[in-house]
Structures are given as structure tokens and as C-alpha cells.
Amino acid sequence: MESLSVTDTVREHAERTFLVTEGRSFSFGEAAERATESLSTLTSLGASPGRGVRFVASATPAVIWTILACLEGGVPLIPLHPRWSDAEKARARQLVPDALEIDPEELTTSRSRAPRSTPCSARERTADPEQLAAVLFTSGTSAAPKGVQLARRCFTASARAHAANAPFLRDDRWLLAMPLSHAGGLSIVTRALASRTGIVLVSSSDPDAWLSSLARGRATLASVVPAGLARLLDADRGGAMTSLRAVLVGGAPFDPSLRRRAADAGVRALATYGLTETCSQVATQPLERAQRAGLTRQRARARGGRGAGARTAPLGARRHGHARVRRRRAGASRGLARHGRRG
Image (cartoon, rainbow, N blue to C red; front, side, top):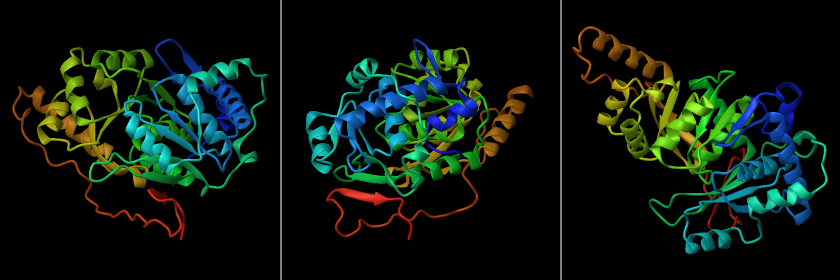
């Protein structure tokens, strides 16, 4: 795995596609240029490693450039969910009161008026893996949402762990339809940076738009919640999802009947579990076992349907492990938990 600096990608991968949107695609070189210019504007507004940037993380290119800029300059990013109520946003502001609040769309306009700058490697700014990269807010399932402080190495470790289960291929593109304010969505961006692969940005939750983006962007990987997978299977009459190498399914219980339905449709759906404190995935089905299960079902259908609907063996990992989450350090900001520190 490589660094989280988009400018570090330019030397060898400048022309490779990084981001595909509905209107156009952007290479790593173009992304580096936009990130560097955005960072220049953010710095002029007072952003720094000691003062993070807070913004509503809608699914737009401008938000992607803001994320890249923060990672490039070692500026902590604090993304807010675009569907949050005013009260929820107010609580987030209270938890991180000193952050610089910006509108990424306005930042893009300001950037277009700013003088051009030359990209420089993030290693010249910061190479500390323990440096704070992001403050993400928990979903609040069991208690009031809290801010979780994640170091840079949390995101690189997450990318390495994913690659150990499903190694990245040169032409991989991850369909990004998860909220960028959550670890599951933001980690898609950081994995793309670390693996030098691409992203296909989906700006709509409509299943037809999702499937259209999949085909247009030639996506090979995707992440969805179970309810979203069910809607996609309903809409996917042409079998477009079978082109995906893997679909990670998490965020809620993955019902066995939905697993079987996905397998019968030829979709390699992997059950995954994660939480904000551990920077996305904690446990994910092995890709190889899901592939073998799919072949078993295909062979059963080829034999005339016998066993096509039979229950297959559970696809969970054989090995068991544990995740350790440290308690909040004394003196840390109330409502904020810090993760990623060693020892």
C-alpha cells in the first residue's frame, strides 16, 4: 500500500483514471492539481494540522477535492452527513468547536480564481502516521453520536487489511455510494489513494442511477447496506451486478435469504462488519469462499436446477480474532474518542 497523498501518485500514475462522475472522469494528475489548489485556499482561510476543516460531505467532486486537500496537507477533516438535521449538525459543531467550516462548492469557486500552484508531495508537509486525519461521528445506534478521532495509519491499515482479503487489481474502480461522512464511505477514497485505483461516484440513491453508474464507470467493487442490495437486485434485470468482483454488504444484519438471493443472481456479496472506532471493516467474508459458493450454485443450475436453491455452508471466516478499542484518554475533548495511537 502507498501513501494517502494524491500528489505522490503523479510521477507514475498521472494519466490513470482516479474519479468517474456522471459528467466526466478525472485522472490522478487532474485530481492532484485540484487538491493542491484547494489546499492552498484552505490554508489561506486558516486550516492547518492544528485546525481541522468541517463541511457537509455530499457526493460531489468538490467534496472529493476537499478530502484530498486535507489528506495532502495533514489537515484533519470533519465531514458532516448531508441528511443530518440542524440539531445534529449543531451537536457536531459543539464537539469540535474550533474547526474551520467551509462549503466545498464555494471553495471550488474560490480555487478557480486563485493562482495556479505546483503540486508538492505530502511527505514534505507531514509523514507522521500518528497524525490526526479525521474526526468521524458514530451512527448513534446505542447512544448519542460521538466524534471519533482517527489517525492516518488507521486508514492505511484498513486499506492493507482489505487488500489481504481481496487484493486490488490495476483496473479496479470502487463504486462510491456510501456516505462520505461515514468510515465506510471515506475509506473508499483512502483505499483508492493507497492502492492507486479508481472511484466511480454515485450522487443518487436511485437503483437505476446506481446501475447506470456501474456500467458507465466500469466499476469492479462496491459497498452497500442490505436494504440497498435488495433494491438493486430488484432493479438489475440485465445482470449488471455480476460484473463486480465483490460487493461488500454491511451496516445492518445481512439476512441469509438475501445472501442466497444474491448468490443465485451471480452476485459475489461479502458480509462485512465494521464500526467507526476501527475505521470501517473489522471482519469480512473471504472473497475466495464467496467465489467458490457462486461456482457451486452455477454448476447446480447447469445440472438442471437441482440444488440451485439449497442452503450453502456459511461463508464467514474460519478464524476468530478480536478488536481492541482504547478508552478515551484523560484530558481528551468530551465526546471525542481518539484511535490510532500506538502504545
